[in-house]
Image (tube, rainbow, N blue to C red; front, side, top):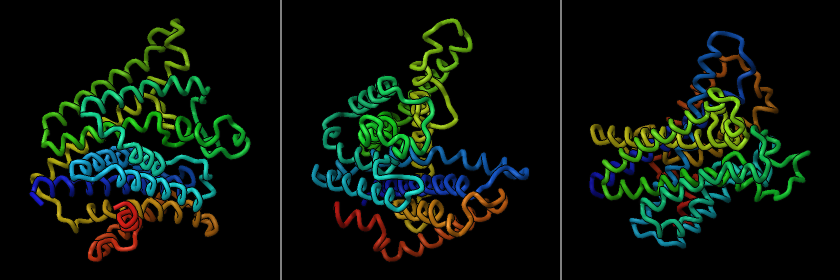
Length: 363
C-alpha cells in the first residue's frame, strides 16, 4: 500500500482510539463517581467533558471509512451487510444493559449502522451534494422536534421509552429519527460530512479539507451567536420561542442536540482529523502504537466497558460509589489495561473480537 494511503488509514485508527478513550472515561466518570467531595472533583468533571467529542468522532469516522471503502471498490451489498451488522451490535448492547436501554433505544451504534446501511444512496452524490444534504438534515431537525413536541431536555427513561413514556406515538421510529441519544436527525449529518471528508482524503485534497473545517467552524460560531439573540432582544417573540432555542441554543448536554451544538462538534472533529493527518505525516504511526491498537479494537471496547461499568458495578456496590480520586484511579488503570491488551491483541489480528466478527460477516 502506498505510504499516503497507509498513513491516512493509521491516522483514522488513531482517531478511533481517541474516540473510545474519551467515551470510556466519560462513561466511567459518571457511573463510578458519587458526588463532589474534594477539589479534584473539578478535574474529574472537566475530564469527563472531553467525552463529548467521542460520538461525533465515531459517526464522522464511519462516514470517512465508508467513503474510502467505496473508492476501494466495495459494492452496495457490502455496505448493507456492514450497516445491518453494526445495528445488530447496537441492539445486542441494548439487551446487555437493561438498566440503561431497551430494544427501542437508539444509541451511537444504531445511528452508525443505519447511516452505513443508507450509504448506497449517498454514494451517488459528490462532496458538495453530501454537504448540502448534511445541512438539510441539521436544518430539518428543529422542525421535526417541534412537530413532535420534543422536550428541551430528554431523560434516559424517555429515550428508552420506559414507563411512563412507553405509549408515546411513533414508538421506536420516533426515538430512532428524533428522540434517541443519537437519532438520525441530526446525527446523519455528521456521517454525510464524514463521507465528504473521506472523498477529499482519497483525492489527497488537504486544502479542501482545511477550507471545510474553517467553514464549519465559522457557521457553528454564527449559529451559536444567534442563540444569544434572546438576551439582546428579549421582547422579540421569535428569539424567545422554543423553535429558536431548538436551533441555536447551547445547552450543556446534547439530548436532544441543537443545530449549534452539532455544527460546533463537527468542527472539533474536522480539526482533530486535520491534526491527526498532519502528525502522521511528520511522525508516521506504527500499527502497534497503543492509540492505533485501541482504534482497531474500539467496537469491542465500546461494548465491553458499557456492560462492565454500567451493569456489573451495580451488584458489586461500585455504582456511583467512589470519590473523585478513586474514580480517577480506576479510570486510569482501566485505560492502561485496555491499551496494553489491545497492543498484545494486535499480534493475532484482533481475532474473535467485534471488529473481527464484523469483517467476517460484512466483508
